[in-house]
Length: 82
Image 1 (cartoon, rainbow, N blue to C red):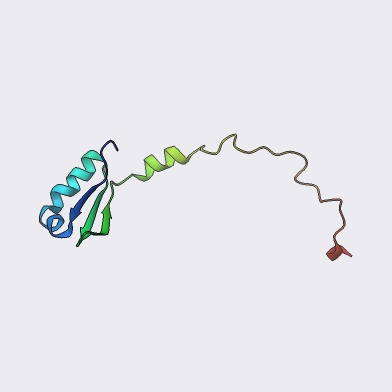
Image 2 (image 1 turned 90 degrees about the horizontal axis):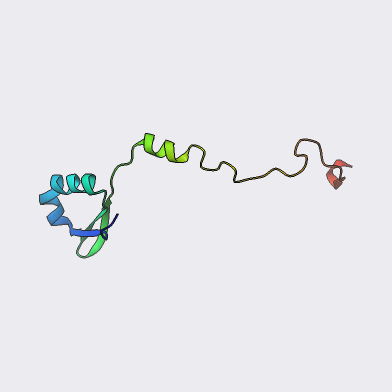
């Protein structure tokens, strides 16, 4: 997103809806619809699930390390074990 987020009044959005949707799709820019100057709705470009999956798959690889034995029971006695 190179350009800043665009704001558009609800009445103007109503008359230019299809054109604005095309612009959001083409530019991947978010548009905020306002009512009397107050943000009312946000139009964001659609991201396909395939794009999301490709970015998420393997995202946490090598981000943790297991130190020690995580399978064997703890040797410390707890008061609930007595």
